[in-house]
Length: 258
Ligand code: PEP
Image (cartoon, rainbow, N blue to C red):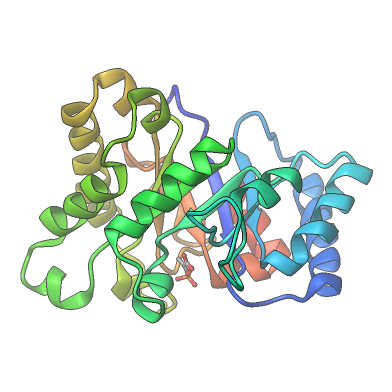
């Protein structure tokens, strides 16, 4: 992981209106400053609801915060008759860097499949956004011992038709569904097993250069008490953090692996 800058990403999910978002980002900026956070050593980003992005942008720009920010979803289309959808062009214009694609909650409640994740990833990349592609198995799949093959099939589907240049830019978040929001964190060994397999697959699909460039995050009930051990694993390059990212102090601790 030495060549990859670790990424700690907070997924606020459907929490924080645009005013609350300002407070949370301010608190986070203070907490990171208090902890003397070195942004060149560990990148920190927050994935906010669409309606928060303008407030977050204003604050980040005004205070010259080193934080980046992102969205939790994006349309695969650029414009047109897609009521309720948000174009990657709009996100890019708001200074958005990252966009989560295929989060398990979108797969579960909005029937998003690998083909859609693939289309959204391509649309994001075409407009300069970095997709954080979420993959990971449900409990039944893990119980059957099929977590690696299941997750790699999602990776294959998400990357279908992507050039090596584009593939090298993506972030992949391994998020076992049974660990998301349950308080049950995967063991570092479980996270490494799948993260390592994802990297091997990237080398098979593209090259070792691409495999070395892509950051693979772990997500699922990460807390300040579990991050340090997870980050010791060779192929874990950061975390996608849900619940704990709503607490600025806790999230700042996670960003310094404490
Ligand atoms: C997530 O939303 O991606 C996530 C990992 O949530 P939590 O940390 O709450 O399990």
